[in-house]
Amino acid sequence: MNLYGVRIFFSDNLGFFLMLDNWLGRRHGSLSFRVTQVLSGHGCFGKYLCRINREPDARCHHCVHCGEDTAQHTLAECAAWEEQRRVLTNEVGGDLSLPAVVRKMVGSAESWDAVVSFCEDVMSQKEAAERE
Ligand SMILES: [Zn+2]
Image (tube, rainbow, N blue to C red; front, side):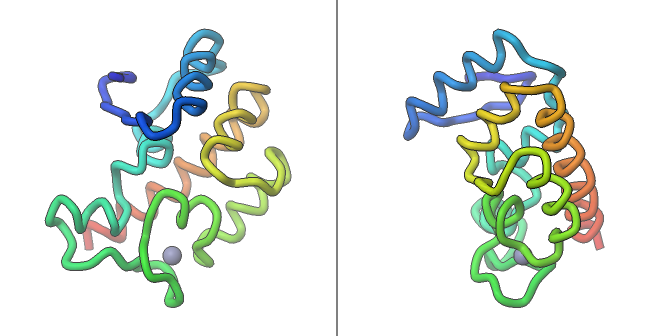
C-alpha cells in the first residue's frame, strides 16, 4: 500500500490493514512523515537503521536497558520518552500496541492529535540525535 507517498506493509496483520483502510476513509487529519515512521517502523529506529546499514547495531541511543530500538520500543517502552508517553496514555489509554493506538486514532480527533504530538516530539529528537 502506498500511503501519502510512504510505502507501508502490514501484510502480516490483516486486521490492522482493514483498520487502516477504515482510517483512511474518515481520517481526522493527514499523516505527517514522523507519524508514518512510527506506524510503519520504517524510520529513525535502530533496528531499521541497522537493517539498511546506517547503524552498526539495533540498540537504542536514548536508554540503557533496551536491546533493540523499534517503533514499538519508542512508543511503549523507551525510558527517554516517559513524559511524552504520560501525555499520550492520558488520552489513548494504557494499551500502546500499534493496532490499539491506530484504533484510538480513528476513534477520536483528540486521540489522533495526541498520537501526532507524541510522534512529532519524540521523532524530531531521535532524528536530531541520529544526525550527531
Ligand atoms: Zn530506548
